Amino acid sequence: MSPLKSNVVTDSFILHNKKRSQQFAINRIHLLQLSASLQLEFAQQLSYQEQLTYDT
Image (cartoon, rainbow, N blue to C red):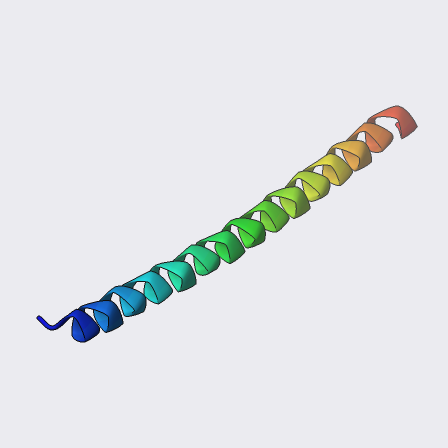
């Protein structure tokens, strides 16, 4: 493989890895947001259940 073609392949591979890395980071953020949202929902449900318990 010529040095020029080799550089193009290497650059393409690096760019591909950067894109995958960015997508992985975005997916991780989405999962963290979802987790926080579910934890909040769970806490609100618990709070609601406790209120029902104290009100009766």
